[in-house]
Image 1 (cartoon, helix red, strand yellow):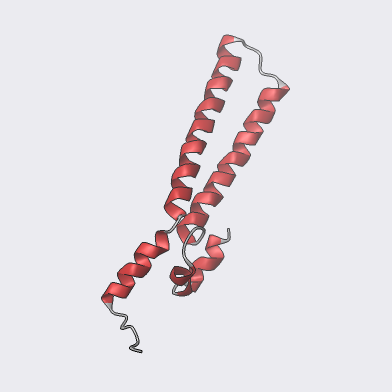
Image 2 (image 1 turned 120 degrees about the horizontal axis):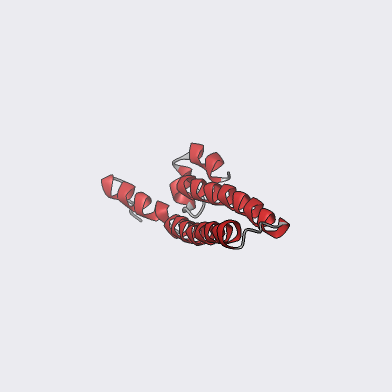
Length: 102
């Protein structure tokens, strides 16, 4: 059986294969992060300016939004470096594996 020749076309295949589900992870994380950030900002505006009553539930919501920011950053950075990518793509980039597990 003839062995495949890996030339320039092989690199293109690995690059295309490397994106796998990482683009979907980045887009989904960004969209839901945007929705949650807008929701928190609007609720804080209403509670501070309209109702003029900022309670402990609102403070917990702001704290949860801070954790959501950290989660979104970790998800996007992880998807850029390894999460959702094919093992063949990562085998050629061992340095990205550690960053992808962020």
